[in-house]
Image (cartoon, one colour):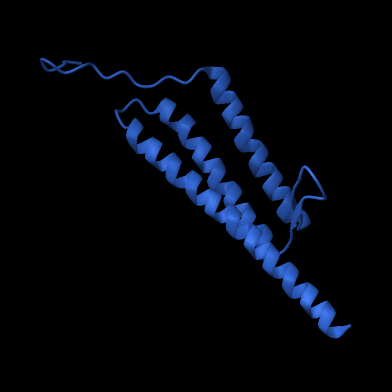
Length: 128
């Protein structure tokens, strides 16, 4: 590849194999947990104190969407390693956008679950 005078030669980023494998295991774990949780209609997040948060129904699907977005965000890092073109900036922005979207979906899942819990509790109190 010829390099114009005064321009630095482009070197694609390198991610060590151990890190790529750990990222792929993380993606696999997130997807496996999400699919299993949707199948059982119970996605659970542990808490330091208490029982944690259980997502059921629509909130579980919102949380699953957050898991999918998180997995996609991590996957872009691995894909960037194999893409030899000079577009690390694109992958960085894509990963950040997916991660931010995942965070917003996660917050939405918690809000949905709280709303559903309040509605169910309110219905139980009104009928009792």
